[in-house]
Image (cartoon, rainbow over all chains, first blue to last red; front, side, top):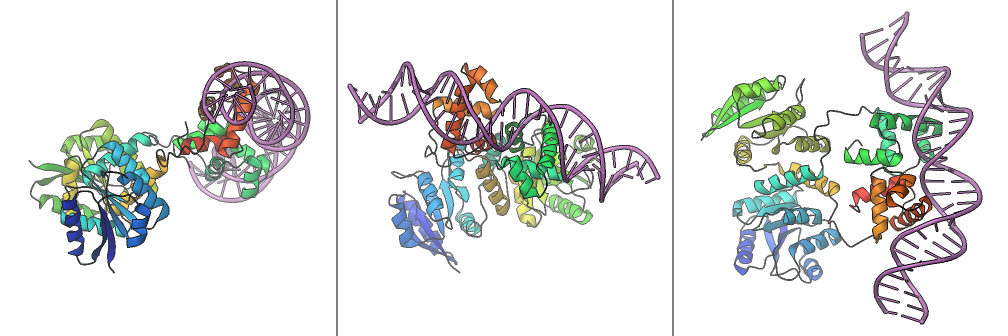
Amino acid sequence: MIIRIAIFEDNKLMRNGYEAICNGTLGLVCCGAFADANDIDYKIRRVEPEVVLMDIEMPGNDGITATRYIVKHHPDIKILIQTVFDDDDKIFAAICAGASGYILKSTSPARLVEAINEVYLGGSPMTPSIASRVLKLFQQYAPAFQDSDEKYTLSVREKEILSLMVEGINLPAIAEKCFITYETVRTHVKRIYKKLHVASASEAVVKALRERLV
Amino acid sequence: MIIRIAIFEDNKLMRNGYEAICNGTLGLVCCGAFADANDIDYKIRRVEPEVVLMDIEMPGNDGITATRYIVKHHPDIKILIQTVFDDDDKIFAAICAGASGYILKSTSPARLVEAINEVYLGGSPMTPSIASRVLKLFQQYAPAFQDSDEKYTLSVREKEILSLMVEGINLPAIAEKCFITYETVRTHVKRIYKKLHVASASEAVVKALRERLV
DNA sequence: TCAAGATTCACCCAACTGGGGTATTGAAAG
DNA sequence: CTTTCAATACCCCAGTTGGGTGAATCTTGA
């Protein structure tokens, strides 16, 4: 099985370098090398890659936008972001755009080939320094758990009902779904409110989401 | 410079294996190998590691709790989580607890040594499959920026009221806070529901949180 | 100037919600 | 064997919510 790779990189030297690395490696083949991400749809349809090596910094259509586009319209294609910078905003944007991996340009050819194989197999290779920033961002944006030592002890049934509430289903409908009466659902809900120290469905679902109770 | 490593691993064979790997590698030394994380404070103070190799699954005091404790009280110590499982909850909990790296036990000794050096230097080595899950979790929990196509065009007042709803405040109270009548709040809320295509406060706040509308 | 939209307010009605009880069953724990 | 607790179910009541309709300002922009 040969992995087809499309390269997007504005620097001609690097582009040729990547192409050489791909074509010089058993199991890889470069099916296209482009200096920009304009006409991205045409280019992707033309060369039909399985993995895209994407430079973030490019003139015209930037790598993030292109990534977002490819993820949306060709969800099977894996995208490996390459950049010289490692600032939080770019990483954050790239991840949210749906990139599968993120490596610095200082990465060795051997590691690059490894990374290409890894994204192709569904993994997410990241330069450790990038990974470190991702974790920090993650901790920042998901402050749940932080030091929650099992604060709330919801029973199985209660968790089930709470998660249905998070889905926006109202109590009568929950009763149907759970094959129990409306009154029983209400009993559970009241207990949930007491345990979570809240007084309404909205508060409960917010707490459930924020503290990852469901 | 020699990196001091403390090992927490309940399986004796693996524990001895890790110890042998550390002591057999130039630049690393195992300063302590423990079968559980009980008395974690005493153990850490006793052996003063720079890097902790932590098994998640251990009898008694689990690896996550121990990680949280170490991060809190010895913030300079880097923690490398090791596990046989790669389920979302454990990964999420470990990251939120403050682990610096996360690798599977199937990782080769060479890669383990590499990972130890990387966490020591401030990086975050992750097995690609773990990294992949981290990215997915990240995308799930930070859907901001996702595609800021201004999906919903809420007015200023509507956003204000929606965010008060997310705080769990009920409509009469919102009216007071905004110095408008209860009926007006209700009019706004109804319009918000139409714009968001929802039919209840819970749904609205969930959507607001998930899509970062507030 | 006229249209569109934001913001404000009001009334009606049916349904749902929050809070307070009480009570039975079965399983697990001591 | 008794206690505890989750899960089930029912009652009452006041208050809130969802949905509909109508309407008056005010700003903004075509």
